[in-house]
Image (cartoon, rainbow, N blue to C red; front, side, top):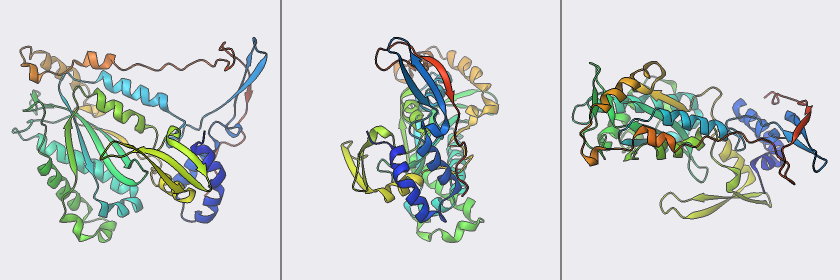
Length: 371
């Protein structure tokens, strides 16, 4: 089966030689990590099977957040932690997408624009949520940054998973006025656009933004997601990885890569074939700058305010007489649906018996080449 590591090992050196002067350090680090993930370069361990009298080699993973082979376990742990914080109210997913005319600027100023995308969208949500016509208090937000479309196109957007309950200034709980409605998306879109424009007016990239961006409608979606767990399950696999899994790769032939993706509009399974150079370029544009946080928490989900969750639960418990259409699956039920993935022991692929570790393989080189 073709893997991303195989593609990068075969074509990465030529790509770096051709575009080395334009490659960001984060791109070099990601390429090096993916190329050497689970290879002798990173070292590993030797295991022995007494029944088969055979030795097996297991090499270390790179742990790079842009490697499709790594960090699945961390995604499961994050999901379990979020499930523990679920509240017994209806949940919503809000999505804010940067307009296409802004994407070239975002690609050149990733850290700046991604930070603004988070900060401005969260502020717009909280401003509307404070209106008593909708919620009347501060919301708790879990935001996750995505930069890719399903065919690896550059499509920066942020998802928020939001419970339909707010916290007022005097320490009271206030619920969303309707079970299947949180905030008006048209008003939210225009507020988001206005706040974003005000934020970028005084920064260096203002002159790179075309004026037409501020005349068009910006895309904002809001949809109910039940108890919130389905939305969290949707987001979890993308938090510690990026863009494309090895399972979606179909073939590598004649310097072209073919991969599967599901069309957004129809849901049908399609294939996309790209020249390997274009494939690597598309993949690397989703590599985030070093240290950029792609999961952020606001309102009563922010680390400094999570103590409020117990008080919110206690007040929600007092609403014992609720109409059926106002109820949501209790947090305990939703959290129980998250199955923790235990780290499996190494077993012999031939007989299935547990393997014994008998030796260590030292790493050959732990650092990527200097850009």
